[in-house]
Length: 473
Ligand code: ARG
Image (cartoon, rainbow, N blue to C red; front, top):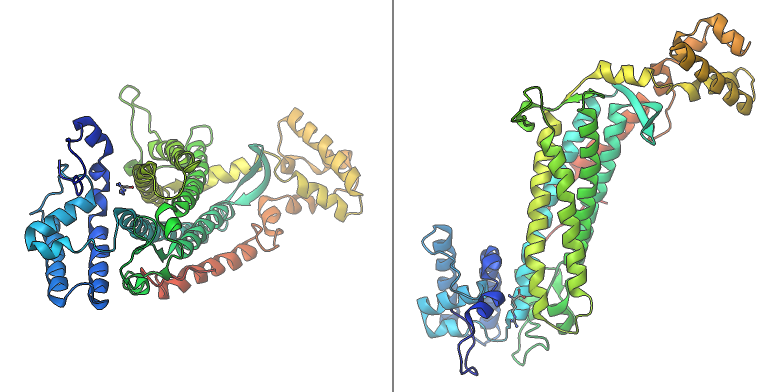
């Protein structure tokens, strides 16, 4: 048991209590962030005349050695320390002696962990943003390819009106684009430095909080020391945004699973992204999509978990807050792997165009257009709606699609039908006439795709870097 305290204690901590309390098992992933924060703190302490130049140099050298040794696996982060902060500090002291004991001047583990968590979350936001962008690029590419791949659009999971695959995928483009915007919003709001808040009430040392904030790439220092050590809003916001990403992925997964079924047969998932059955040789299962759908639950769980932990906590720091780590790490890891695999899966998926088009033809998806046709011939819409309703019934009885009816059969239903009805209710016409911006008509879709391309290229030039993140719109 290696801990940073003990002066006022006369007894050893109970073994189980120690383990229950320790966080090294999971906060070891902060090791680089902890060193980064300590380097900034030490540099500031020297500039403020709190450390001598020699002391600062020794600390910097010691911390950099630790960084190198952990990287080179010469130094292992073991469970014998209570947390990552103790690990770094104890190692520093054993390397450089007394100067190491001065590093913690004007600092508490409360502001230290608040800093480490922010540094970590901030970096992960950028990584998730990058994965979302990669998915958007895949989607826009598929949209360009499938401008004329017709398929049924559904409401109530019943065939409604024909759309194109480009249009359908475009809906997901918008969702994941909003997810990226949420990443940017959260980043901007959280990018303030809590270091210098101390345990809760700041410190009597003349720290320059603007200095450490700038060194670490923050917009500035936080403005209330009690809030600084007890704020986990950004974690909650992130978990809410990640839950939304998962909800989008899960809806998409559900569709891929349906489309991949024998009944639909719209797509075939590549062998690299599907699995077989140990007993049924014919099976090729959409496991990646199912797992993505399934893992949505645990990310939602992390959000509810942190909200519940924070509810009712008095100011300022409470140990309850240590619970923020594992669930945030798990949610971040889950979302990153789902985004990566989902992207790979749809990139390699084959779309069965004829099957999709046939499905759009068989479900009376052109019934609205047939009604509009009659309106064009002077029939009032309400009457046209009734005529087409009877026509659909007739088609069902006679097992025919609308465009399979003869002109005589049509005239029987309404004398307003003429030869040009066939052209008017063809799938292509139905889609092509829908040209309002955001609709599936090719020209309308092309406009959106060009807009998407510009959106994706624009932030290429300003690829966010820690410290100067400027998300697009
Ligand atoms: N492991 C703690 C956490 O994650 C670090 C802060 C410890 N502070 C304290 N007063 N025990 O929240």
